[in-house]
Amino acid sequence: MKGYKLTESEIKFTDLIWKNEPISSGDLVKRCQEEMNWKKSTTYTVLKKMCEKGLLQNENSVVSSLITRDEYYANQSQRFVEDTYGGSLPKFLTAFMGGRKLNNRQAEELKKLIDEHKEG
Image 1 (spheres, rainbow, N blue to C red):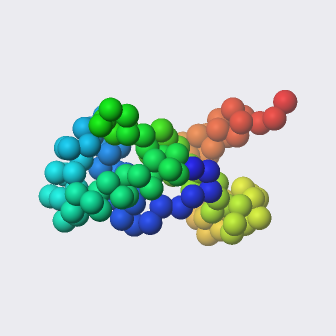
Image 2 (image 1 turned 90 degrees about the vertical axis):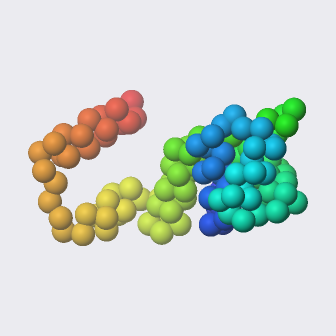
């Protein structure tokens, strides 16, 4: 799964699973038909692709995720910082802040986060 970016329809499909897992493959087909207007074959094709990518599993007709929604989006965020800012978190934060000021609570939260993740 690492490094794989989902398409818009794959995100919608996976969100549906994240919200309802574990879900039977039959219920998944019904929900995809109702919410995305997909045919049964489309659902199973996308499900197979997502299982091959290591994001989902389909065991005994029960579909569940192998990675959480938060893990997927954390991976995408890290990839964005690597691709856009050469992996430099300070460069990313500088661009993200865009001259804005932090309030005291935000500053303390960031300090705590930095302390928790500081090397040795």
